[in-house]
Image (tube, rainbow, N blue to C red; front, top):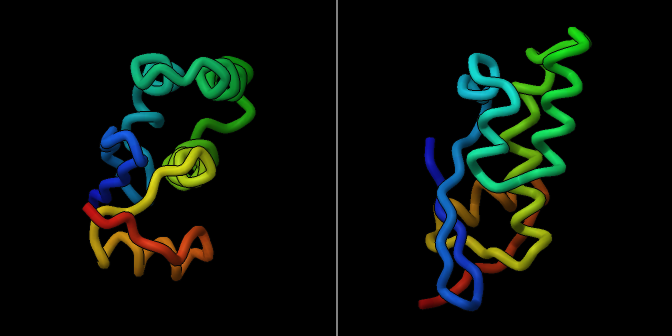
Length: 96
């Protein structure tokens, strides 16, 4: 399932929910191409040391959504707002 978050400057980000198949197969390349340098090092550490890329793949998408919500991104629609509210992330919606 995809969700869209938007900040007050009009920048829209697309997010997936649940298990990250991209992180499972491509590891640190995923956050690298998304421009998230710190996450690249964290995922790379778990991937290279063998500490468990599978747990990272389970939490990566939720971590990314939470990070952007903390940066001020808000949902574009009520379905996204309802999902994020059910996960106790946010409760407000950004109007166009």
